[in-house]
Each structure stands twice: as C-alpha cells, then as structure tokens.
Image (spheres, rainbow, N blue to C red):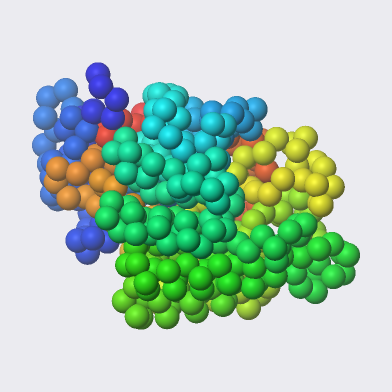
Length: 432
Ligand SMILES: [Zn+2]
C-alpha cells in the first residue's frame, strides 16, 4: 500500500473543524488517504477498519510549521525518522522542516538530498529551503524559484537572520511572485552577540550577557517595512516580545501580508526559568518577562498571532550539560506542544475551536499546504484529542532522540491520543 493512502472509518467522535464551523458527534470516512464524508452515522464499507472515538475530539491533522529534524548532518541529535515519530506521538500529522542541516537546502541538489532522506518520515514532511546560499544572510540568494519548484514551501535562514537588507528585499520580491512566504528568524546579531538569555533583571542577577527585546523588534520592524515596499509575504518565526506583537498587529491592520507564530514556551514561561533550570531553558529567542507572556496571550486572543508552532530543537544531554554561556540554544517541543496548548490556552484565552485553528487551517493557509480542514477530497489527516486526560511530561518517554525540555514533571490536562495521516494510524494510545 502506498504511504498515507489507507482507508479508515472514525466513529462517534466530537468532530471539530474550524474552517466549516463544525462541532458535532459525527462519523468520518477516509478512503485511499482522502476524506470522503462525515455524517451522524456511516455504515462501514467492507474491509474498511473502524476506529471508535467516543469521548474524543476529532480535529483536522495538526501541522507544525517550524520543526528542526537535524538530518542530514546532525543525526546524533535527531533523524527525520525519530523526529517525525515524535511528531506522531505528539499529535502532529505534518511538519515543515527548517533548513539548518548539513548541507543546508540552498540548492536543488541539496534539497533533493533532504527529500530523499525524508522517505523515512512517518508523518508528512514539507521542506523549508534557505533564503541565502549557505544560510549566510549575505552574499547570494539561493535559487528560490528552483527550490519552490522542487517543493520548498517557504524560505528561511532559521537560526540566523537575513542580515543584508538588499537581499531580504529581493527575496521578498521573488517570494511575492512565487506566492511562498519568507519565514525569517528576526535578530539583530550586533545587539544579541554573546547573549544567552533575555536582557533583564534576571540576566543582571546571573551576571550573564542578555539579548535585548530590541534585538528582535528592530529586525521585525525592518522586514515589515520591506513588505510594505515589496508586497512579499512574510511569516515571522517565533515572536517573543510585546513590542513585536504590536508591530505585527499594526502591519496586519495596514493590510500587509504579514503573519507570525508563537511557541508554547513563550506563552507559558518567563526568564526566571533560566535561573531555575539553566541551559534547559536556553533558547533563541529567549524566554522573556511576564509582560511579554501577557502580550503573547493577548496576541493569540485578538488574532494577531495566528499560528502556534514548536521550534522543536533537539540537542544531546552532553551538549545541554555545558555551562549556560556555552550550551546550545533550543528545546524539544513536538511531544509537549499540544498538551501545553490545551492546558494553558483553551478556555483561558482561546476557545477550543480557535486553538485548533492555530494548529490546522491557519498554518495550512500560510504555507499553502493541503489539509488543515475536513473538507471531502482533502488529505485524511486527523488528530484525536482526549481533553480530560491528565498526564505528566516524562522526557525519558519521548520518542525524540533528545530530551532537552524545561517542562519535565509538568502536569498537563488534555493530550493527543491518536494521530492519523492519510487514513493510516501512525500513533495511537487507544485500545484496539
Ligand atoms: Zn527554529
């Protein structure tokens, strides 16, 4: 059987589809990997397996548009297979993979190599290609049109900004013509160099160099201005400050094609966590101040922030055991993001529908991906949620090769309990 091309009847779940405003107890039928129909009661065609979803929410397959799978080049941290297995276990049906690999996908050949490796993926894999050759942020643009033709869904030098303004302007012009967004990591390196956490009271107390909010906001402001001039689509990776949220809010009010995402740790944790946990809470952009967390919640609530993503960034225990100033940036997120969303956002700042939209139809729209809704003919991807399930984050149980999380021991309420990609059950905690 071809990959992601299975038959399945999912019965009696609470079907929630934000695109169509659906919220009802319905059966849903998938044939040959595609959604056929949903109805209060569907007979099971012969040979079609049945999955009972009584008491569960059945949502369109969740999409993580910001994942680091580390392959090729850093397979000791993660592989496409281990990372996508972690995605499946976290309820994620599709990932968009960031290009900081060795080699980075900055040419047709390099992108082809990544796509060949991605045969091992257990969920859908979409490559994000580089903006510049070698992810240098200066020098030459990567061949964006060729990369788009080969399947790149967006362009990013993630981990690093596109420092050269003329290159960024040209990239946005090409992105406009290709109808694929530039997806930048916004950072003014001259303001953040040597920083290992947010520049604030806690960094001062720990006597370490901080990364000021301006180090993010000044580059966001520059790029929004370039969008105003070029009309190129911009999806800003992982916003973390109140100032950035306000810049995006204004850009959207001006009708610019600007969108952004937030990561769970930026709406749950503050820089105090660095004092408690050290390198386990070190990432870029860093954990900020309580007012910034409030701004992330407000940005989610008013629609300024349309996407939640993971920035899943695996590192080995040895790497993260180094001193705060030396340890690498980043935390894993694929196996905790859905639980954190359900625990910290739903019925506090977002309705369940709105939270699901931020993982499904919004990311699908921004990266022009198939899926994100339960429309007949669309990919048969489903995420099944148990809203009542209370569970503890135990990093030793992660499917990811890496365990670098600041959420160890957290008690969460709500969990993805089955993940279906093209009618194929790629993860399930349900009794057979
Ligand atoms: Zn990233």
